[in-house]
Amino acid sequence: KQEVTQIPAALSVPEGENLVLNCSFTDSAIYNLQWFRQDPGKGLTSLLLIQSSQREQTSGRLNASLDKSSGRSTLYIAASQPGDSATYLCAVKQGGSEKLVFGKGMKLTVNP
Amino acid sequence: EAGVAQSPRYKIIEKRQSVAFWCNPISGHATLYWYQQILGQGPKLLIQFQNNGVVDDSQLPKDRFSAERLKGVDSTLKIQPAKLEDSAVYLCASSPGTGTFSPLHFGNGTRLTVT
Image: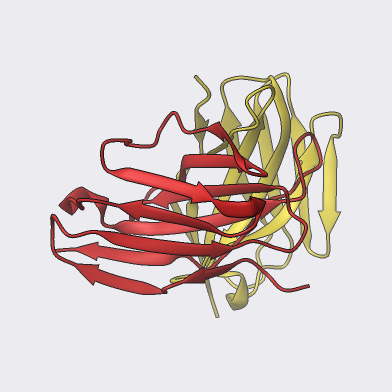
């Protein structure tokens, strides 16, 4: 059974720091890994999707990497801003079943 | 393109009552998902449709939850009767298809409170 873990559960940093968010998963038989952002009272917004054959994806200040063999992904946020404050979730799409399995998320607070 | 639409946004009911949620996916998206997100947790898949058919409903409490997707477009999720532990946000998502590059697009969800 696939398990996705995000540690720590919460992080508070001053504005301007470069951040590293971690995600680990137990079963490497995945189609892809997706990073989402969730603002309070809102649905999930897709940030980046990395296919199983890829190593990384970039979008603006965000860079996500995938090491499938070790079951890890990292989301880098450069020069963090207060507007980056949100909960960040990673999810893996299981090969075969197509099921998307989520971590519990990491609540990020960027202080001005 | 218009996003995934869900209604209502909020619903408060008493336990043992019934409730229904509606979802309209992005036009042309073949795959539709219903997720349950309990406060402080990641979303948990309840049911996945591929066009009209059910692909995965292994985590759907079938004694009280039901879902349908008529004509492969809109979907409704029903709870009858509701329990206190059903209090959660119910998220609908859609994707163009299946496979390695099929990102999920989520609606804003319906927040259900069961008292």
